[in-house]
Length: 137
Length: 420
Image (cartoon, rainbow over all chains, first blue to last red; front, side, top):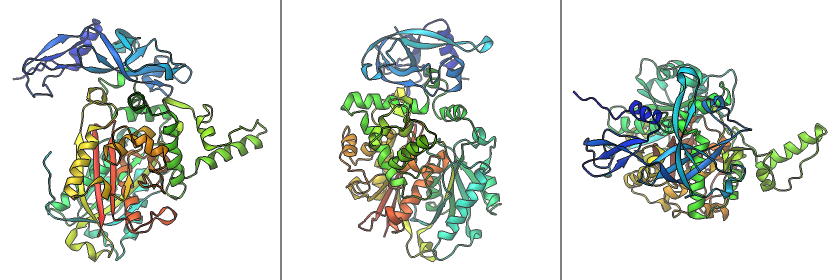
């Protein structure tokens, strides 16, 4: 009987508490964010929770003008674009996140490698309200 | 990965496609019938469709696009082929390429002597934001999409990483689209089969007719650089960097090699196929290459016993212009970081040394996602058989390759065909 605790629900519960929880593979030492019950590097299932510090750098980004409905509902769109990016945490793993505080009017000046710090954004209304990991330039 | 060999040879003896475009009033089965009819007519020595033993249908999301699941039996029924087994293959935008590969494996295994491989998608019934949402489900809805990513956004992010790593200028992406429109202008199946210059002149004429100020664009690049003419979708990807929202279908007939010449004196042999999977974009060691594409290509080349330099005709998955540049490197045609220079130098143009996407690619021809991987084979079929009309490549091309990507490379399928 296996009870997998390294679930996306557990990850988002930690985000709701403004923590960034991933996994550490006790067999090979690899770190993973989001958490993974099986280490993709060595296939061991001997993993434990680990908390990440929230400092990182920008690896890639885009300024989104044609938004999906969930971001339109959050007030974004053609006249109010936002940045989505891939961030590498100082501990190594990379994650997708909304990035705040970048100069969207001059995207060519945004530097790959720019330092970022974790923050948290809330989207959705009522019971659908949920916290997400984001980063601040 | 270990090199795998087919149990027996497989040949392509018929191929057809609907026009790609926006067709209100036609659903995926209507378009599939058009593709099937053209495929049937393409079999030089004739086909009795009752000899078809099974169907493999590539389709991404009829469920969300058309509110219709379980589409494969419907396609079989609408071309009169029930009760033959019909299975839908879903690997996002690589569904068509994956269906081809499953058809190949089914014939090579000896299970069937003749199978029909189809690809279908009907996208234009939904408004743009719901199409964007539906395509987004090809990414990780739990860990990628909450970041605000869209598909143009993912590829745009790859473009920023590529520009930073290799110094590629913004203009180079526009040149990929321009080139693909030049090719698509010669393809009567293309959704946007016009040169950028024709689109530009039409806009000027329309402004003049309405009594508006006439735009001052002098060249195609002026037009493409104009943020009002070429709006930003997800910077740095703009409207003319993005493949369109499309309806369409394609169908090809695969048979065992032993019986190929009963159907045509000019069969193509399906000699290589590779497929690989991968994690979410953020979880890969590189953002400037698709590891799954490199692996799929390596498997396909090894199975076929050919090298990148041997390939004469190439259709790559240019869902966005950056994707074509990365594909040209992943397939081994150019070194990493040099694909953009090949675009600048015209190497990938129809008249260049390494023509890419002579059909117009997904950009100009259209991208009905589940149909695209099968649609790519139509160009190989025509080019290798000398039937590509005005866009025919010179020198009697012998080897053709298709590169079909699902998502941002969570799946890539590469297929290789040979004329003997």
